[in-house]
Amino acid sequence: MPIITSPQDFNVDDLYVDLRHVINRPLYLKCEGFNFAGSVKLKAAAAMVEAAGREGALTPDSIIVESSSGNLGIALSLIAASRGLKFVCVTDPRCNPASMRVMRALGAEVRVVSDKDANGGYLGGRIDYVRKLCESDERYVWLNQYANRNNWMAHYRGTAPAIDREFPDLEVLFVGAGTTGTLMGCARYFREHRRPVTIVAVDAVGSVTFGGMPERRMVPGLGTSSMPALVDESFIDDVVHVAEPDTIRTVHALASRGFLFGGSTGTVVSGASRWLDAKYPGEDPVAVAIAPDFGERYLDSIYEESWLREHFGDLLSDPAAILDD
Image 1 (tube, rainbow, N blue to C red):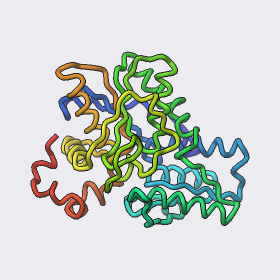
Image 2 (spheres, rainbow, N blue to C red):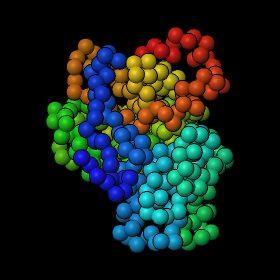
Image 3 (cartoon, helix red, strand yellow):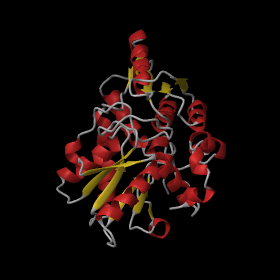
């Protein structure tokens, strides 16, 4: 019976969903949402805060500040609350309202930045705001998930070895690309341990992480409007870009079979399905994809008809298409 004293001490690391009967492709989905933060971001948040504490950057008077589209903000809100620290999350209008409510319930301050950067996204504006905060008061401590090596180290030490233990014959691993912390930690682990695993990054159409053209993106989670400092393409074997309508179709197809996942998972599963069709037609490779979170926080967006009608009206013109897997 697990007994914990801190919320970040609990995480289920060995639950997988066999998606064969859902998407008709050989794919195991690693579920990372079974912890008190509800997402894989708890690992990176804990590692970055612990490192900042060891290095003396955090004091009882410190105010943690971070730019986040939702999940990392929730994870840091949880950890800050457990340690008695203040936390300010700088986000943008695409952040799910439910995620903002969770952060505020945990005692965090949420500030929404609406200024777009040169690529039409909000990331540049969020980071500029964080920098100005830090310049205004030395109590602010920016962990900088986009360049903090402890982001990917959390997955090098935890997520990747956990997958390796469960799937010693793993052939393909699909990982969504946001800050690329999960991606780079897993990719470095399998490369440095000389495991013959094909690492496939899954990104959103409109993201510039891998040199794509910037476009409008409405689903929070994966993709960036500025290339993260952590990304190193030498560790990545292939990249798949997924259009947001395909993300929407996939999450609804999964939900129709009882699996309510978030937008990032829809993107990863859609990209993995297409990649497996192209690279392993009719074959049965050992393939795993990482599901960062679940879908409850997306009920006001990708599962809400009015939101879908506003942003993806063409998709709703054919109701049957939204459930086509």
